[in-house]
Length: 127
Image (tube, rainbow, N blue to C red; front, side):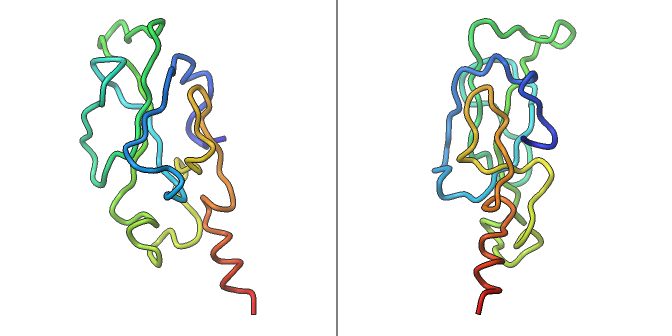
């Protein structure tokens, strides 16, 4: 499971929409963003790029104070492994990163050897 998200926070997810092929990414960062709608592509205001997002079902209700919905967004920053294979995450991954192949609606995903960069490190250390 992700170190930052619990399944109880994403119970109204209906679908995960990928903007990039998740099989091509070793990990993605995930966060809950507040958005004005439960569907459609949300605005993205971070560095890097959004690679996916969740759509919410009709039972999702907005926060009573802000009127906004909490939706999961998947993203990568410029210094992540896909852009800098020998960079700071050549081995290891950010705390909010999970293997995108383990993500499904209502499932926060999991860290794997692939997402942590261990398979590459193990392969390169073998004579």
